[in-house]
Image (tube, rainbow, N blue to C red; front, side):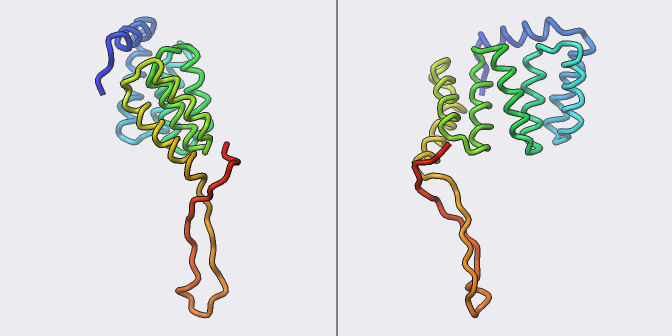
Length: 169
């Protein structure tokens, strides 16, 4: 999706505050993340954050790499830190919402998506995330049910069902 002018100005502001070496490391981290080398990307983002601890693009990149590795709670901490530094970034709000969806925190995720939509009502990731959160809130969390004890082995099975419950996080 195309970035708005305000988002581009914020990106330029964050990049202008970095040294040339930090900019190179940041770009390399983003390239490595695109190639699926998430551990190496995290190392690059950490190097940038050592020299510029308030660098929002580095925090967001590290969060995305951690989320790709399955470290969702650590990613959420980075997304939250980045969102605190740049509260008007719609993409950070939506990314934090998706991390909360991964953790099963559906109501909190919905709140993040709604906050993102208050900033930009046309944000596709926020709209898509809010729909997903509402669907999961309506359907309830997943539960694995195991059927065992049948004489035929094919009858013994695991299946996933949606459980409707008012006790959703």
